[in-house]
Image (tube, rainbow, N blue to C red; front, side, top):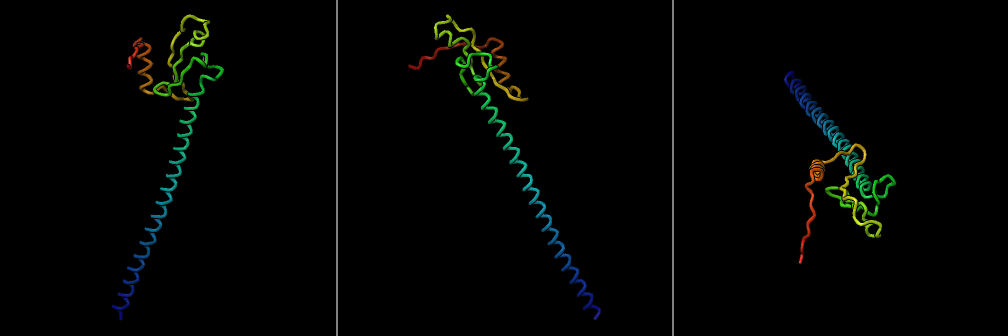
Length: 142
């Protein structure tokens, strides 16, 4: 009879361990799923914020010549988008209107908002222009 009691207790312990293990695994899976969901929400919010920031920056780049503090005639600016934002033919409208004989200068402009800084390629372009490594060529496509 004692051996039957021992077998019953052992069976009960094994069943209890199995049930406890199943419960613990269920808790672990639930917490892991919650953590993944929370991480996904945070990642999506970060991506949306970044996307909104990029979109705001692109809009600012295109509208910059229309701002009252833009240092050139808006009609003299041409939007490029990449790798620099715009090219200004300073004095172009005056030349077209017959008020001037020649352009004052040609200026490459990169518009920055907030704490944005020049990218490595933008820095290289700036150095190229500053060193005078800029030329005008005519390409005959006939």
